[in-house]
Length: 356
Image (cartoon, rainbow, N blue to C red):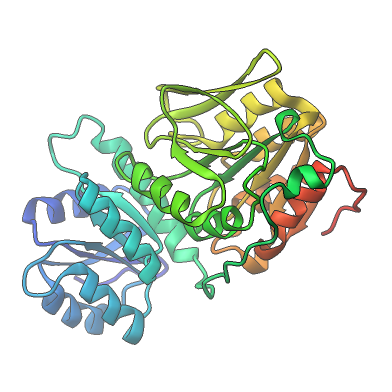
């Protein structure tokens, strides 16, 4: 194949001929993408990388002769191209996909097949991920360090039952969320989170966050009362919303159409929090491509919530925060390492000037 100039050159690496055919056919629908090769294993892929110098690689976790994980290790050392990992919808597959993110992959997806009812929806999401991966900037892994001891929120004079924190993220968000939750005290107000991630992977990601955070982190069930010390991660393929419940809040998972090309959508979460919590909330928008959540963060801002955006320097993709900033939705723009402290000072309502 001869690459077309000015297009994103994509190399597909998968041992399934059917998957290679589906990915090649569906990605060809987008005028910004050119599939320059389709390899059945790492050894074929190596020759195609030399020949075509792809901008983005899609890589299957499980392959013959050399696993996708081993090939990813070698890629990151010798040709650190943005990689999107494909994995099966199993618990073991999800764990491997999260391990791939630790090893340097930009994003993960579940493997499509020709019988998938939502094939075009899945492929639209892949096309978005390819474009985001092409724009991604590799960042050093953030240093995880605790900032307080149990009871530190109450020690600051904050009643965590009276506040709610909402966070939205996409490409690069797994590391950003890990950094933030590792640095939140265990008695923090409840946190509701949307991370763009496929169904089947969010349970493993919530488990991983739970192992690292002083807070209890769970994948969102059908409904749950939000309490201090609890962080709820949206279930893949389900929107997460918040509604008022007495003197507190209830989080619900629900189906529905894609919003801003996503399900779960940050926009859906933020709009519900603006309505349910108003000035009692803190909204945080993190790294990711597109505008998902930008209007919702503006709604939160207009409802009196404190709002924070991750800065360009620490973002893998400075898309979602940039869109929110341009709408006038953001009180403060902070580096990733400073966001936990920014959330806490927002809870204490310490005066702070907007930073640009």
